[in-house]
Image (cartoon, rainbow, N blue to C red):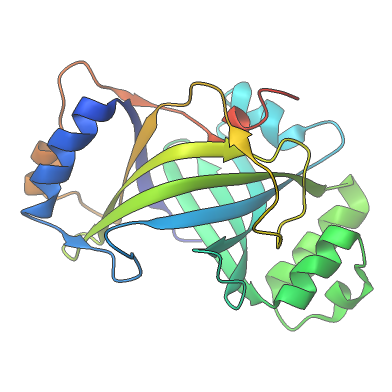
Length: 223
C-alpha cells in the first residue's frame, strides 16, 4: 500500500484570499474544476457504534473509512473509496460504481456486491455483513483544487461544509443539507516523496499549524 503525506490546516477567509493569490502564480488549477472549483457530495459509512467517528476523535493513528462520492451533481461518475490513515500519511483506494449500484447500497440491497469484479466493493460488502457498517450521513462541500507536478503535490481549499444529518438519500441532489456548525475553511496539502520548497513556502501562514480536522466528524456534530 502506497501512502501519501497529508497535512490539514484550519484557515479563515483572509487566509484563503492570500493563499489563493500565491498558488495561482505557481500551481495549476485541477482540470476537473469548473471556474476553479467543484462541489463534492460524499456518503460516509460507519458502524452502529460509530467506530470511524470515535477513532477519529480519539486520535487513533491507524484507521480507515469508506465513502461514496461524486462531483458537481454528476451521478454518471460515482466512486466507492476507502481512505486509510497512518498518522499523517494517507492512502486512497477507489472503485467506479454505477448510480444503480450506489442506490442499492443505500437501500440495503447488497447480495450483488459479493460477486462484484472489484475487490473494494467485495471488501465493503464483507464489512457491512460482519461489523454492521452502513451509510451514515451525507457530507457536501465546495473545493478549490491546485496541482503541481514535481512531488505530485495537491493543495485544496474546502469550505461551505454541509451535513445531511441522518439523511442517506445520496443521489437526490435536492436532499436538504444544513451548515455543519461553524466549520472553518480547510487547506489540505498532499504530496508523494517530497514537498518542493516553493510550495512549502507558499502555504506558510503565521499562527497556522497542521491539525486533524475531519469533515465527517464535523458533520456528525448534531448526532
